[in-house]
Length: 271
Ligand code: OMP
Image 1 (cartoon, rainbow, N blue to C red):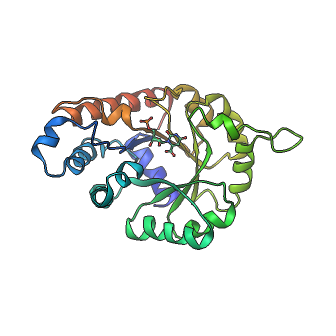
Image 2: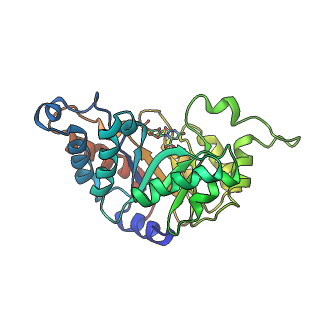
Image 3: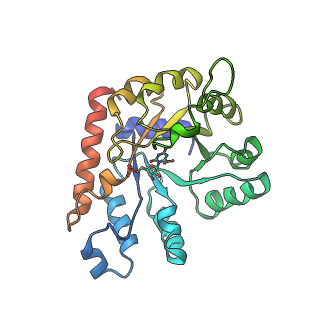
């Protein structure tokens, strides 16, 4: 998917919403487990159907599928097939290795699974990320400032005498590996105070922002400091949407939660 298409979809749907399909067999409604041979796929099918017209992206965290072995991998592939054309498909796999190996990760997610974007870790440097950038109209989403408590362990450490933080250095350096048409960054909504300085380093890149909802991130501050003229933000919520209800109404409850988030966004942004 091109940046132009993504912007057009955001405008048309009046939404920045990325729905996280972190589908956990333990958490999905019991009636699905009792009535369907493949409850995970049925769950995803219904969540996708209920939210596809208002979501700009679906983020599939691969851990939830890999943990289910062979069937999980199949569900991951089948879930991607259920997602309509006009939605960015993010494989949240957090990969990157030596170049020769990253080439295989890129092949797996872009060619075999047909994802539009993959999350990647920047720690191994440029050659670990470059193979993903060989693909036209595909995206990498580089971990910059993550939403978790452990983000403070390394990401804020100064890397020079001027006090540049590690995550700022990651943004500065890795933004030159690709460009605004194939690179986004992960910035957690739990660090709203940092969006201002982040926008000084990457004024035009799209940011994928997890941490709203279950992790308690600050949507208003994120929008205030993160928004650019091309929008430049994808707001992810996973558990806060997909587990809104544990009953037979789980899909309509998910849609309701998704709309609540979108209405909050529309209060602040004019599309
Ligand atoms: P909820 O907290 O349930 O909305 O899920 C957040 C999702 O975003 C999960 O799939 C996380 O793995 C992912 N995530 C973070 O929560 N924090 C990050 O810093 C980065 C990610 C991610 O790369 O998506």
